[in-house]
Image 1 (cartoon, rainbow, N blue to C red):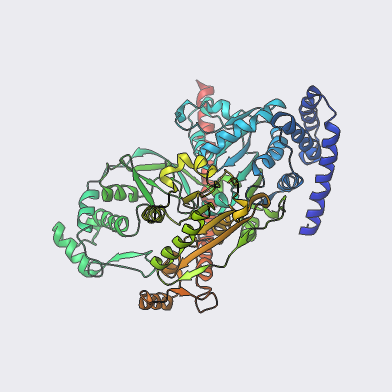
Image 2: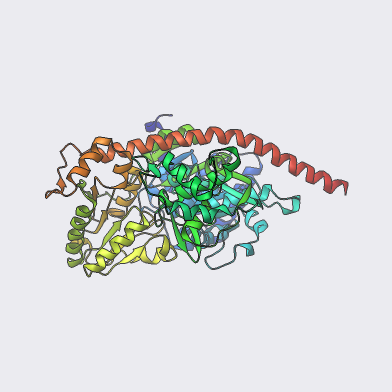
Length: 621
């Protein structure tokens, strides 16, 4: 079905739902609650779920009005209708995705356990399960959060109770680890999952694309601990670049030179470091080299509380519980001088790609999806449907301001921020890494501009910081995680100043992430403005632009005139760099998917045989 026919179908169903809502307004509370029983009886009699959509959506919309005092907009109902037709809906920031989600979740909750709403983090999972859960419970369904609240012990969760609920609000990683743990259970009594019926993913592009190839691994029996980590790190720190080792121009690859090999052989007193006898030592030296010169603190990882924690480079969040494989994490720990954790053997693993392809039905919501519509369809059989905004978008997206050097770019952006601060106009500043957010914070302090700092080190305060970001004169520095799940409401007098100013200090690897940032301004018809500052020294350019661009940058880095014309030779350099990255990442995802399908077949057979053997042992006993 082509787009225009699909759109016509969704609009027709939306109007039917709106008409039925008006009828249901005349029902008493008990009569409305009884609709859940009636709908479940129709399911039991064999009526297809999609034939119940209009009645179910009208029921939960009217319940939301009575319980929460919230009335869904027409476009929210339209988006909910589209999601049930195996779509990812592109719904702009501030348009009310949380309320939109209760419609398909209620519909699928009628079928019983196995229905999940996947949120961005534990805070949102608990918040939405609590706030939206009262509607489901009022209508007679059960709902549970699949993750513990902040400050609570994860082990205190009763997972049998969680997964017996009709609807579960959880995160992608929590669901993945629970799936692996469940399949490693030794007895049927220890298993708690009850099937993968339906999953609705918030920030669907971040899960299904950006994190698609991320492996979730459960480790078990420890490997014999090596004593080479510290000694290898100590030696690597003494080596000299360009003499003992070299890096590729994009700084993604690194290797030892012949001179470096000889120096390491002399240090350790071995004759042939590359021989089979010294394979393990050489492996640790390579790990130490990569840890020291390719992985950067406050970009790839942070060190906090005596531990090394990985960072999601796409959104700045800490990847709780995740570690690099094959000794790489231990090499990082040796580099940072913290306690070296035990290297473990992987007992089970799954990628998000494979995890969500197991579901009978998928749907998703995000502010940005259209740019990757073909990949969503090819891998997940999901179309993309763009939902119109409730009010016209009047945000002004300014052309990028491009500079030669990073220093010139940052200093120029500070002038704009100071003017906005003096005008009492709120500013949201995006940085591409934790390190740059800290640097920008120091620059603002030097300028005497008070501000809030939101990055991986302050994630626990995210909702509070973002909620205050629209106050007059508020300045907020953030990684690209800013505002996810929390709207920025404008304070008094801000609309007259032009609304929220979103300022990007560099373009990100993917234009979707840039658009997510732009979407923080101009919500619900508010005025707003977005402006990106970029330089030829930005990471995305250094690692992905042609060699001649890097040579020209080195030659002109100290030129008196630093601002580059929007119509000059470099006007497309960042767009081209983003295309290079997107092509590489897409190729990697397809490669991972192909390998993952092989592992999936093996994994399913192994899990089935383990469970069958356990059941046989219980029966015989």
